[in-house]
Image 1 (cartoon, rainbow, N blue to C red):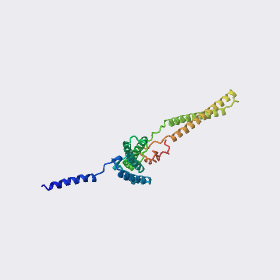
Image 2 (image 1 turned 60 degrees about the vertical axis):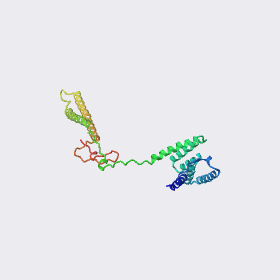
Image 3 (image 1 turned 90 degrees about the horizontal axis):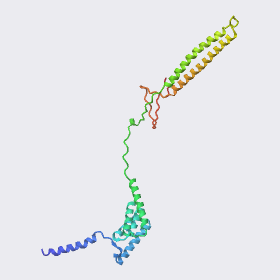
Image 4 (image 1 turned 30 degrees about the horizontal axis):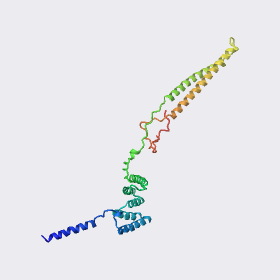
Length: 269
C-alpha cells in the first residue's frame, strides 16, 4: 500500500500538466506575450492579411479566427467581420463587428461600424425571410367547380312594348274608321250634283272639306299606329332574353364571368 502512494501522486501531477496543454487555449492580451510570441503573432497576422488581400476570404477567416482564439485583439474581430461580410454571411459579420466595438468602444470608426451593423442585420432579416419555406399550395379546384356558372337573367320587362303595341292597335282601328269615313265622304261629295234644285257650291265645298279632314286624320292615325308598332317590335328585340325552364344549359365562361346562352340571340314575343 505504501508503494501505491508515489504512483498516485505522479498520476495527478501528469494529469495537471496535460490538461492545460490539451484543452483550448484562453485568449490573452497582446501585452502578455513575450517578444518571441509577439514576433510569431505578427508573422501569422501578416500571412492572414496577405490571404485577405488576395481575396481568399474563407481561408483568411480561419486564420483570423485562430489568432482571435489566442490573442485578445479588437482588430482581429473586425477582420473576421470583413471576411464574413464578403462571404455573404451578414448575421455573423454583424456579430463580429459588435465584438470589435465591445473590445474597442472608443474606436474612431465606431459610428461607421454601428451603421454597418444595422445594415448587415437588416440584410440578414431579408435573407431569412427569403429562405422561409413556401406556403402550402392551394387545394386543386375540381373541374366542376371551375366552371363559371351563368347568373340567372332577370325577366324582361315587356310592359312598355305591349303598351306601345296596344296604342298602335287602337290607332290602327281609329285609322280604319276614319278611312271608311273618308271614302264615304268622298263618295258623297262626288255624287253631289250642285245643279239640282236646292244644291249650292258651298255645300259641295263643305263635303269636300269634310272628306279632306277625314283623310288627313286617317293618315295621321295610320302613321302613328305604324310608328308604335315598329317601336314595340324594336323594344321586344332589344329586351334581354328570359331564361327557358327546360332550355339548353349556358356555355362555359371564358374566365371573366362572360357567358353566352344559345337562345340569347332569339327574339321572344
